[in-house]
Length: 231
Image (cartoon, rainbow, N blue to C red; front, side, top):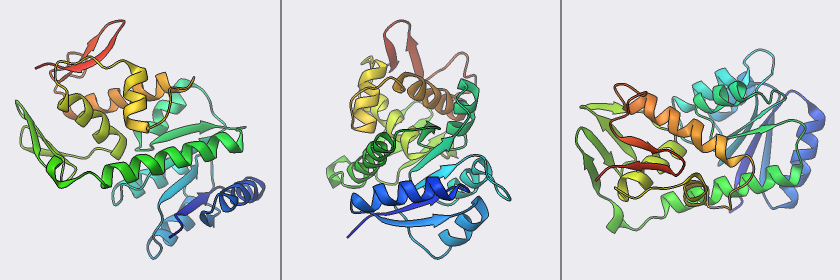
């Protein structure tokens, strides 16, 4: 069955271009003109991935992403004309899985769509033998339920954040550089935009699980090399 992609953008030309490219790749495509229309559609439609513009009337992409994340872990690729690092950090911090700046190459965006769907399929297709808990001090990661608790409190992580944390927790003591994290989690080769993307997600995880993100108990930085969780 074809995967369904929801395009949310107030620019009809961008929607038309993406619709054509996605349809040519065999996807079923739905469109919304703003965040509120997208939220209304999601009440009665099931989608596999959302392409979400930031700057829109009524309900913008940031607010829409926050509201979607409160109910769903569907992959979200955020679009924005803003390319400053802070803008990207803001977008990813709301729960988006990827961030693409305008103008963009449609073929690159399609590649990112496919990468997100591959990662999602891989995560849901893990064999039952891997359904277990990882316990590290007060941190408990339930791989079967995709749930994380810290000091007895359940923490809400995005699918990408969970995948990064699980990767590091499952290989305690091993230092993963940014390239390896990106390849392992996104299931594609490292690209020029990968470094900042991984670092933002690490920062988000720390803010959720650490008492003091500046002095992390769990995810340690090995300067000049990468990240690890101690044995």
